Image 1: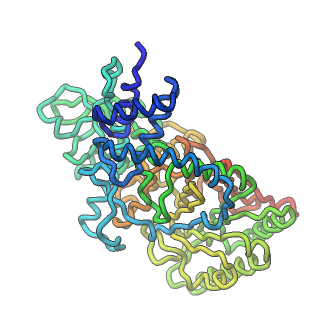
Image 2 (image 1 turned 90 degrees about the vertical axis):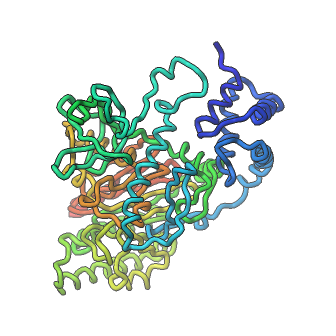
Length: 541
């Protein structure tokens, strides 16, 4: 039996947690009829209207007819102005922003409103006991609302056979007195005081028994990971696990269509429609633009400066000047011993030599933006994530010679038109593998890289661990979030270089700029893809 237009309209708005009354439903049907929308185009048209409705600040879960009229008028007029906007000149400098973690506004999840709300207080590096609790609640609630919106979990308003196959989430408090029944739970993997692995949600804790589980789903599970666990509740008050998996990842497009009005970066929110228009302009007008990414730029090794000089020479010879050059630490090969004046002096000399090298290329210095992201061994004010920028005492010459210098935090973000690029320098792979819990996957190389990317993006967090594994400043945990999903994530790691795209998000490790074959990566905003590059110093000899 064919699905009626009414059913399609209800289904689309229901996907975004909105309910329609008879007047609103009649208005939407009239709009479709007025514009002679064909049956096969109904869903796409209603998607456009529902997404625009979500952008309205006063949008409520019960759809308002007044707001629908406003949305309709907005869409009508946007079609007239779109042509003029596409012909206007766009200066990429006006749409390029470098966002430090300590500049990002703090947004909490409000279960009552079912949306994000701006924090009433300024974040503090000290944090409070309340903020530490709120961090974990935010993490769980943000992912839980995406799960409940997923097609496998969200019940349709239209009766169908598919309702029988829907998965229903339960809470730990619903386990009591229901031994021998099967449950699907969502919570955080933690260890109890007795050292036993448990699943904790907002209502309680249940011990997990993995003896019946042969292999978990793809991904890496660590203490602090949020997981979907299916199992049988036993008389011993444990959950005998039969399946475990990461929560489903929600695409950037879906999240932006719901929360497009929220300015997560503090640089002005853009609508999904504007993002699409910008993407088309970037492909058309800036197809040759590139960003360079380097990691482990050891300034105490002479090969490092020789490799950079070779790259800069090649850029000048081919008239190929990158728009952004990102240097991620570590900027020293062995770290700095506490109070060792010789190590500190060598550290200073490395930055001074790099400043002189960059300044010798006038064209690159004038046109390119240089970004410095500290690594685990670099000297900063704090050692807890997010880390503050490199100490200014070591970068004075860089600041005096490079006009477009950005000393940023770790992690940091780069906003270019509608794209968001997250840059994070940490040895994530080794930390993940050291802290695996439950059933460990028998994976090697390429599988591990894929599992790492999948786990990070499914968890919507750069460091999905408990605080004793990876301490994080409580009031700045939001800067580690990956929700909505960014356009690109740069996981600068000492692990092997890789690049892959997962749920529309491109993730890559630029490789280490060390040895005789120095690796780095280029990123092209027009294609939203990266490419591995190598500087071979052996060829010179």
